[in-house]
Image (cartoon, rainbow, N blue to C red):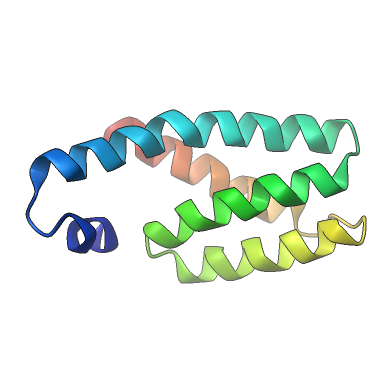
Length: 100
């Protein structure tokens, strides 16, 4: 939340709006990612990971961001070795978003 706090610079309305957008978009993007993987549409999954990667960076999750970057690149060459680890990150973020 430090990054979000710094973006908001004390503006609580902006902070709440940003959190609201993330809480709205993240579950949708997670669903699109899972659907793309199920359909073995790796290029589409890579595009969604790219979007999710930006949200991961907003939370300051540097290791998870690196994992997302690796996973995105793997998907571009039709590999998904990091799928389970990445989905663990997504599930942790989903749980966190329920509490903020």
